[in-house]
Amino acid sequence: MLLALATLLAAFCLVALGRGAVAVPVGDVARILVARLPLVGDRLLTAWAAGHEQIVLVVRAPRVVLAAGVGATLGLSGAAFQGLLRNPMADPYVIGVSSGAALGATVAMSLGGGLARGLVPVAAFGGALASIAAVYSLARSGGRVPLLNLLLAGIAVSSFLSALVSALMVFTHRDVRPVLFWLMGGFGGRGWFHVLAAYPYMLAGGLVVLASARELNALLLGEDSARQLGVDVERAKLVLVGAASLATAAAVSVSGIIGFVGLVVPHITRLVVGADHRILLPGSALAGAALLVMADTVARIALPPAEIPVGIVTALVGGPFFLYLLRRAHSRFW
Amino acid sequence: MRKLVTFLVALLMVAGCRGGAAPAGRSFTDGAGRQLILGEIPRRIVSMAPANTEILFALGLGSRVVGVTTWCNYPPEAAGTEKVGDAWAPNYELIVGLEPDLVLAAGTAESEIVTRLEALGIPVFVVDAPTIEAVGQQILLIGEVTGASIEAGDIAAGIGRRLDDVRGRVMAAGGERPSVFWVLDEFLWTVGPGSFVHDLITLAGGRNLAEGLGLPYAQYSLEVLIEQDPDVIIAATLDPSFGPGLADLPGWNSLKAVREGRVYRVDGDLVSRPGPRVAEGVETVARLLYPEIFR
Image 1 (cartoon, helix red, strand yellow):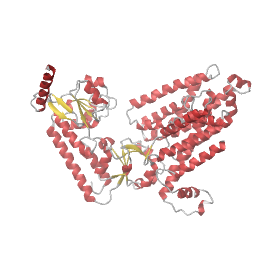
Image 2 (spheres, rainbow over the protein chains, first blue to last red):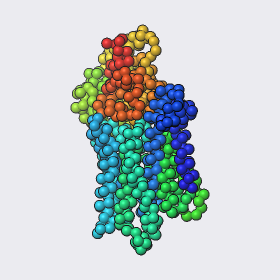
Image 3 (cartoon, chains in turn yellow, orange):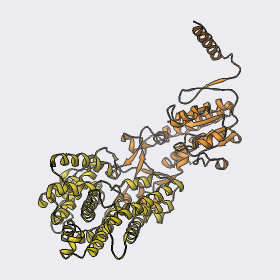
Image 4 (cartoon, each protein chain N blue to C red):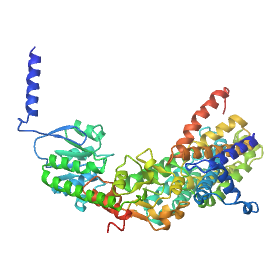
């Protein structure tokens, strides 16, 4: 099953590289990419338009790679939060990563100035981590972090931060379109810089989450049962929340707030592969990556030369597909 | 039967008014084609669009403007006038409190601000200039309704002359028109056909790179921008933080306009407002496109 998902992801990536608002012949795309490989590349004739090389290597490729990484992170973190909180409504943003990031980004954009503009991803990342730290310490009581506290503290902090974002947009009297656009999320204009900046955190956080599959399976039975099975529950919570949030914070800081993927991809994957986190976690990562790569391709080519926000595509395509699976599943899916 | 007679008499009276016999009301048709009857020349005017504010001040009516939007920053005197929100979020309490005898709104007859203010019994005059050509016409209309027809005529004629001059010089320049990418932010929002700025670019002798865009405003594909490689890029903003954001875009520095130093910044207000400075806006853009012709 995982193999099938990986194949699907690879296929989507190839389509994404081959298709765009500018029609680059598929043969040229292949040659441009192969020419970059060591040894083989030197034997190839460079017979394509220079602009096309620019488009494939500098504009399109980093977008595809970034969409895959962000999609994988959102799918994986969503599955982790749903499992940890034992709540089907949970998603990677449920305990405040996105609103913290939004506040950081909005502050940077409201300050104006070239330096602040360039710092938007950094500010978003910092805001996300700060809000998670705040939620986690607010939820702590007597050396433990009850999951319900975590959820409620997350919701309260999220609302508070969102209000601050709205207030900034109302009171700073700048053009609010950049902020709105950032909030909607997307990969337009992202390059290798963003890939290099976000991937280390997404990979590190993602690997830690993947390694916690056994703890998540145990936690599904309830905290007491997990403890009896020898799981250090409090430590597992801290590790999972920390790792999933770190990865999500990095994803959000380079892509804005892309909704829906982190909520629905784990459900879709669970319907297909079952609830065992050893398969569910990597499955959600692969499915999230495939969905977002596909959605971003649609966003790029649906309405040329215009682009549409990728969040619109994920919800428009993913929503009906999810409902279809839900109807077909007949039995209880959660 | 008596009702019918009353109705007919009323009808005759209305017809009489239309004939110009009524001393109390002067009838106007606004930019949206609505009929408006005003008793006297308006003395307390609220402007709900920056372009309207600029027109009123240019007509020498600044002292009669009692309320403007938060975006009205020109001329500088206008900034000191009481703010009543903006076209999307007007503060109706403040507007009513100013007791205006005329509100100049931008939009259409169906715009919420028009219907709401009408319901409050405040006369609303809609100004609508979607193209450069329509600006002079709207200035004349505003001059008429405010009793400043002569000044309006002068301003409209001046704009017409300056636009004709630009047209003539561009025509004389001949050759292929430079392609222009008009950029509003680092997300590559741009203007397409149907927008005021598209019209302005065309009049200034440029060919809008986004002429194939099916929408007046949209986010442009970076791939397509690199493929089309425009001659000139114009960023319509005064926000200095704008440049770095664009330069960070992948592939940006390989664009011809960037390499040749033909990326310019213009005052977004100057080029997007259908007001008395419209000719100045067109000339500014024309100077950037044809530096050797417009000095």
